[in-house]
Image (cartoon, rainbow, N blue to C red; front, side, top):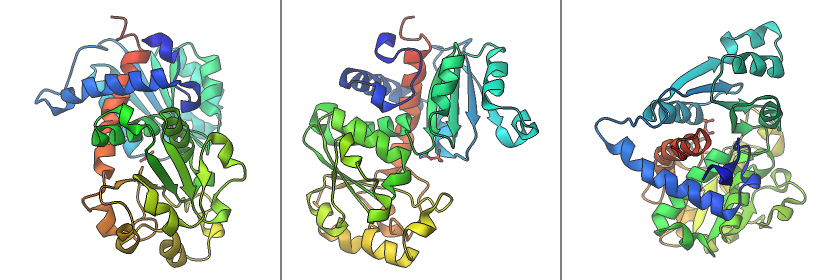
Length: 312
Ligand code: CP
């Protein structure tokens, strides 16, 4: 099983269909652990996982930590604000010093695309990409795919499904990983958003572009709304939040023209009233919290497959 993944998980671009299906199957087998009263298995006892997050995170960091603990691994969180990074230590030096303490895996989130790839070259332990710049967020895409697969009744049902991804595609590592992941499973992916948020050449990843969201939503089986990344450069890319919400926000009016059994996803955190209306985020079509629940199972599966639990 480990051969399907190699030493690290850096991006969906490195995975073939077989590897994605294997991760999803393993995640399904771990879901039961989180539903038990005693939410722990001894599988990774004695292993050490370090969460090294250079950007804020609620879901990903907590989910990796919970996943490690449910597998009985020791999980350590490095708060960059309280680390020697603040004294000028480079990413490489930080990584080499952490490696000198013999961890088995480092989960890294970084604002620079490619940072986890650089670490993976220097480090002997496994490196998992917890989100790098605008590049990839592979564990997010895997949990999104698992959520859709569960709802449809199996990963094979994803073939031919229309997935619509709406919003700031240009700055979204979630969009990139999901386009790659869903297309590898045979889904048809369309992206929509203002032209300023759709990068030139995005079709090369295997998706289509439809700038008119109201039109695109009619055929969608899955609608994934992206967060407007105000902390990056969202404000410069559209005139007002109100106008953005009108044209590209998912509200009850736009939902009326969607299929009756449409699936709504959002990686979180959500900007209520901007990219998604509160009644839609909390409504019956929304699987946003299922995504979060599935995140723990997916990350347990990744630890299991990368850290040797599969071999044992
Ligand atoms: N979806 C996601 O990456 O959320 P966080 O930024 O809270 O980890």
